[in-house]
Length: 106
Image (cartoon, rainbow, N blue to C red; front, top):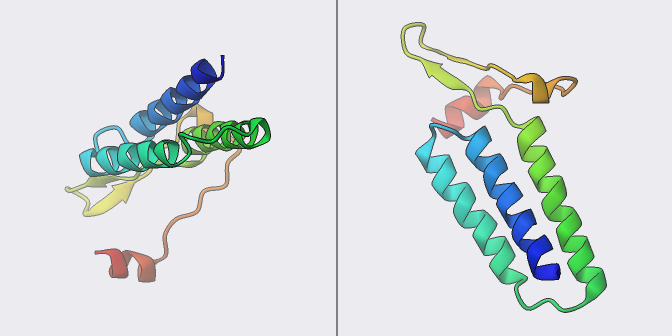
């Protein structure tokens, strides 16, 4: 029973990353590797309380990725980025990176 719950949580987080980072192969690859790493690190957990906590964290991560992350897309003609939040982002607060952060990451 637990195995099914863990696999469902794993799949839900991966599905959320695929949706949020669609078209960005670097983020897709990196996020999939990180999700797998997190699940692998906890593979041998046997405590029921710890398993429940980890499942709750995975569900929160899936929800956060789905509802709080919007990937900006480059508009080469305008030389700027476009953010198109979907209906799942309704009610979320949009935080745009500052110019300082953009300069450091570029």
